[in-house]
Amino acid sequence: MTRRLIPAVATLALAACGSQPNIDPSQQVGPNPVLPKPGEELIAAVGVPKVVGWKPGETPAVPRGFHIEALATGLSNPRNVLALPNGDVLVVESQRVGSEPVDRPKDPIRDFIMSLAHGGGGATETNGAAGGPPQRITLLRDADGDGKAEARSVLVDHLNSPFGVVVVGNDLYVANTDGIIRYPFTPGQTQISAPGQKVIDLPGGLIDHHWTKSLTASPDGTKLYAGVGSNSNVQERGPEAETNRAAIWEIDPKTGASRVFASGLRNPNGLTFYPGSNTLWTVVNERDELGSSLVPDYMTSVRPGAFYGWPYSYYGQHVDPRVRPQRPDLVAKAIPPDYALSSHVAPLGLAFYTGSSFPALFKGGAFVGEHGSWNRTSYNGYKVVFIRFAGGKPVGAPSTFVNGFLKPNGEARGRPVGVAIDRTGALLIADDVGNTVWRVSYGSGPAPAKPKA
Amino acid sequence: MADDVEELSMARAVDERSMRRVGLAGHPYSSLFLPVPIVCFVGALLTDLAYANSEGNLQYLNFSSWLLTAGLIFCVVAGLLMIIDLARLPQLRTRFGWGAFGLLVIAAIVELINALVHARDGWTAVVPAGLALSVIGSVLIMSYGWLWHESRYGVEVQA
Image 1 (cartoon, rainbow over the protein chains, first blue to last red):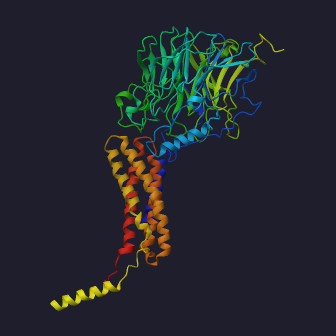
Image 2: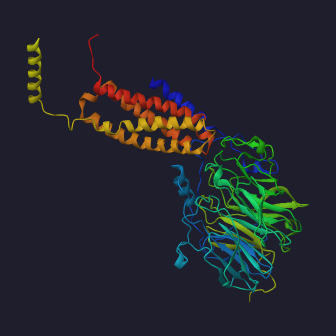
Image 3: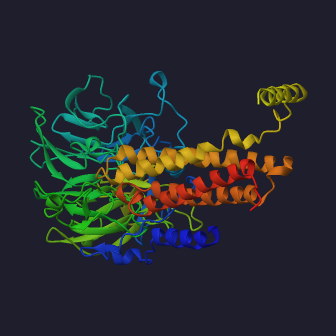
């Protein structure tokens, strides 16, 4: 009996593996990505680079004509950057605290793999009394414009895993993982001593799987928009855990009133209004474990009230076989996003080019910080890409703009996260594994206004 | 008739006096853990059926995942003890004893694959591959228990 069973079992196991054709990431960018059939591997594809950091003198690579240097090094998990009109740069140093509750034997294994990708942080510094890693916003000042911050101060400290940050008038809004806090802030100030005021609670809690809450304000400053990522890959923590998650919230900062602005967005980050418009854009991390080439992450304009599929479907109405009960009524409403970035690149930062120091073709285009894959056998992402825009819409394929975060042998020197355009039109990149903020300028060197002696 | 009964009970009394317990350390060690994988894997089959019939109530998937993990751990424990037993107790080295060991190994391989399938997120962790593997694994692990008992308690009679 057993002799006949072995081949039977082997066949069944193979059938269960599914096989997915290898799809080149270049086929999965733009408005109509190639989507293979879902293939759940027996052992989910995993590829995590060893973290080695930047050696002195090493920098990421930029296209000819551009120049890159570190605006600040020795930071602790810098995840996000915000450039202020006066030239100051706010850096959000942050990481998740604690680990997710264990529901299944798989959970601690996944957490361990993800922690490898961060190389244990590289941050041995703690913030003293409260213990744990720094959870703060650091202000960098490059008053002489030489591309190196000569002054650094802690603007706000003891936050709760912050990510999003925005300044509206004389208010600084910080999106902690569990809520938005408002601080009185006069640009030019280097330290905030006044206590913050809570504007609204955001879904945090024990699981808090996607903990980064992205934040932006409407162009007129009357509304805030917060990205609230899902509490699971594809609702495997149950539907109750996803209440008001996988959504972008619209918040009135005066009253604290809120509504779900758009939903079905698994992990929306990089919220940014397209310059000169009232159109909100976001980059979204799509679901894992349907194979190395599913599902492509994307960048999209966000239509008010729209549903983008998660968890029931992806890319419009491609039903995810893993979610029960199924919701054909919701799938029928799901709309496809605008522009695919290819699978598992993990886009976490988005900035439109509003400066004028880069060549003309960059005007109005999008820079996307791709933190890099871990759910895929061959690495994807680990770079900053540029997508040209025409008429407020993305055009053509993304081009690699800043590269070299991953060494040819697969070791990671850094991983890009948040991106921003500074006062001079240079691109800023938060590198949370390299613990650096990079500054990319055009031309041979720093801004010509104040040449170094 | 009365004499016969008396004689029989006398004989038993003599027997019991002359006997001593020799098997205290001679039991197969694996007997202690032998039922654990059976309970776990059959339990996982039941919770898989519950999941499939609940339109995806995830607590049943969680049950199955832990039962499979525990079952696999105790497959290793029982298997190692079985190797020791087979080495030290010649009466176990029959085709039934070896067969039971073989079935334990095959059941463990099938359920290891099953545990990986159960690590998927949601419905496809169980339906259809996980449930099918649970059925196969349960049959294998029960057959293993049956053969192991056969190797110890089976009696050969003249046909």
